[in-house]
Length: 316
Length: 305
Image 1 (cartoon, rainbow over the protein chains, first blue to last red):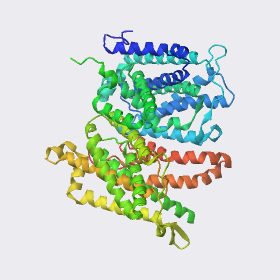
Image 2: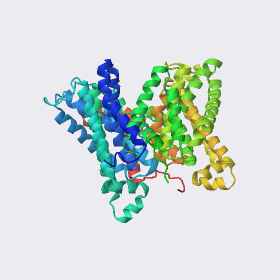
Image 3: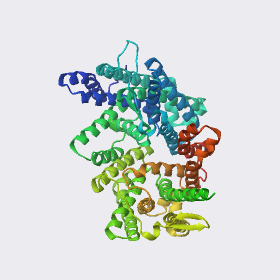
Image 4: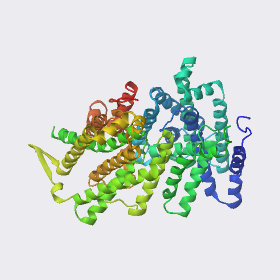
């Protein structure tokens, strides 16, 4: 657990945030405010996608500008199977993970040959392809998207229609993925990935098969995001190509950078901040983007290391 | 055959439009090393300015000239206020900051011009179709677009290859630090290049305004196409952008027009009709992915780096 809670002023904030997140259903039950539940379930799911993006972008230095594609693929795996009469979550969710993993394998194998901004753009290109394929799926709603009439069935085990249960399931999966990622980046594998981020040539000279390591990392992130996509489809009961449009990938990148790259809880902090800011602004003004946009610009200019970096002790 | 020529011209026209956007993007990228996601917003602004000024002055040409000036000024202001602090930062910071700008501009346009789109009508003489070769008629305005863009491309070529400013721009693209060290006012150069890029994007937007509806978010799709163009062409290379823009324009348009029929020859009609639009939209991305796999720096990599 030292990985999680080293001695660091950031921890108070992280623990506080986790406690608040754990108490949301209680608050919703007491006040009867179901909107809070819907909003925060969304926060948890997108945070999970951000965690997976942070694995490759933050720790691996692979700036993927097409991460929303995996959310969409996971969602479509659930939606398409549901439409074809396969309602079991035991099939849907593994399918979502598998489809995303395979897509990530293909994308990664081709794009990891390129560097820098070319990598950014080629991952974007693949995500746009997925977007247009989804538009072309006439049988599954095409441009209009696909309504999912039944959430994934898990026998009698878990009933996803129970909002509180679904919330805690998302919460547990989010925590599990944060744990998984932070264990991974501190393993030999993860250290090699981080080494490749700072100096790839040197890692290769030492004898690490860098390309293969990065590819595996890329596939794991894709699979994790696919699972988040399956959750999102179950949450909204709807899936559409718009979920994969490049601005959605931009949103995910913003969440990760805003929270703090290459920190275990940064993506969660970033997602909470971004979505709540969006929500709060749209309450007080008709034009939230007028304030949200410049905020992002200011964060990019002044806040090195995102919000998590604010609580970081100055390096000696 | 006639249809084919028409589609070919449409492809060239889309290509020219993409070139206008890509030229500015590739200059900004090559010289300032800035990933500018807000470039599409300048395209959108150009279209809105044109629609507004044309309505105010009652003349399309006058409106276009004013719109061009207005986007140039907006670009310069944007650079001085918001873009300058981003130079020399990581690409991720660029993405975050300019993504914020994109949100800002979408909302600003909604505030100023309202959520409904606008239309810009053309003067009568541009609405007619011209007989280009016996039996083939083509909308005059689309020919105007092609001619005007070619003229701009020519001017840009002269500017970049034959003037002192162009020399500095080229020098900046191949070695930024050295240009600064030689005493060139690099700040001013950056501002001018950004303004030039903004004006080119605005020009693309205003030329496109009469064909499309002027609406919020209109720059978002085409921005990605422009990025594809500069990646295929090689970052920082205007020549590459020109070639790649035409290739992308042709593939996109011709694919959209003929893929359904081609597919119908091999597949049954229904499958072909569903598959074709997706496939033709994907084709340019496949082209880009293919090119990057074999030539990771694009077709015409800029001299050094």
